[in-house]
Length: 387
Image (cartoon, rainbow, N blue to C red):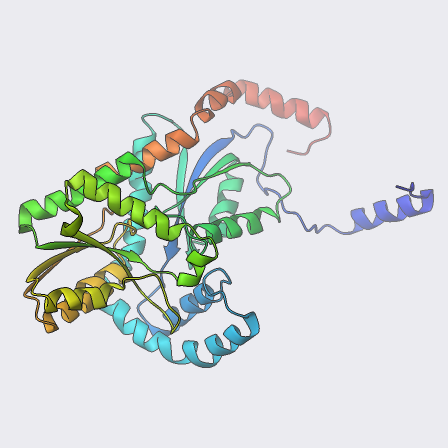
């Protein structure tokens, strides 16, 4: 590589000093006596800010613009999205959100906040000082916003925990995309670890089984238990996405934990969007067929959703129930998600511990007294630092 001439070097240095901006950002509040922190960032899909067309339109525009969510030629899809979908779908979707909205807001947001608070409290017993925050992949609080807030608090190590038990490119991978996109703008990067999935973690399976058993103890048991997972296009499976396989693993392990015979349960996929073929069998057609076959009572549980949301409270508990009853079924029981159950929080805690087992010892070695921190600041200033 040729050496720069003196004039060129002087010119580059002058340009650097003249421009206060940089393509890489850093903490605005960093001080050499600041105590570093370790953090866990729980990430959920997201939710509109209100059950109103304008809010739903903003949410859908961000969600459906993600190229991992809709994998068709970009220009064509943008024309469809902005020319058709965002003109008509928000009003219809807003009505659905309104049917599940609470006086405190979105069920998904409320459950996610409760999960983050519960995990933070649980981790204090094994990893004191660990900071736990939550973010939404689409909507607020955004991943970038929360990561920047953590940076201002002195974050030096970060574990990203997507709240998707089964890995899919359209869910887990897009969280990673957003984290990496944000970090590409940073000058001082934290140590980064990512949870890929937890679809077969025993504690997670146990929490699902306990939830179902509790429901059966209160409401009795149906003739058939349907495990309804969120669907994805079949093309994703053919291209190598492991989501389909991981759903089947979860269903098999959950059935074993419940002691179910193979004919006592069925796995299905819901939330199909568009005309393309998605993973099958589809949930609603399956429920209609069960009713026609003479199944009088069915129980439906959604193992892939850790929080109740539009897809569980409206699509399953309302629409799917209506379809089953209309087809001749007599009794439909929706079994709610694990939400902030203690055993599910324990499952998350065990996953966090497994991913950060060495952090506590590192944190102990790095911690210093207040006087030592001030001494460090003095040394830094003596070497030219301003803070």
